[in-house]
Image 1 (tube, helix red, strand yellow):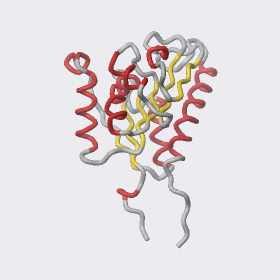
Image 2 (cartoon, one colour; image 1 turned 90 degrees about the vertical axis):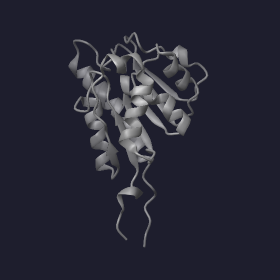
Image 3 (cartoon, helix red, strand yellow; image 1 turned 60 degrees about the horizontal axis):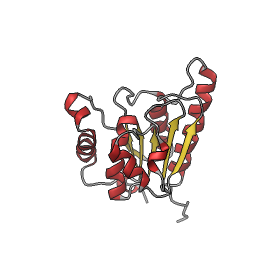
Image 4 (cartoon, one colour; image 1 turned 180 degrees about the horizontal axis):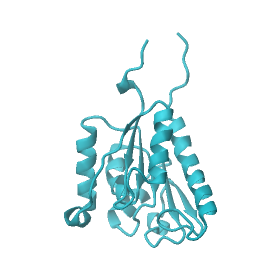
Length: 185
């Protein structure tokens, strides 16, 4: 029996405003998903003035356009892409949220309502990472000490590379959990 694309888990990868699909965390997240047998949808966008003014509606419209009527099994989003958090909570789609903009009320409120099907990771030196605004959440929150909004430690590429590997371990665990147990015919 062949594997139909619609039977494979679907991972939605959402970029930041200035952190595109080619940037390390998203590039490797996509590679992890593909090598795990998942379909990947990774819409590209340009954040203009209108998108910046209404980020939640902009991201939700882009997600709807990219997915059609299919819901993903997992979202991996970076910064601006995390404006999909309210949508994901409404649709019960789990996610790995990298540097969500917790200074924005809609994102903070959505993360506060998240279940343990969500991971959110931010840098300790990132002014947009305010995990206290998501109090009461069941999501796993991780603050990366010394890291900025790109989850890097300025001036320390080796430490930054290790931090990225640690973050990608979280992505890999979430993607691995999507794969059904092996069956025999």
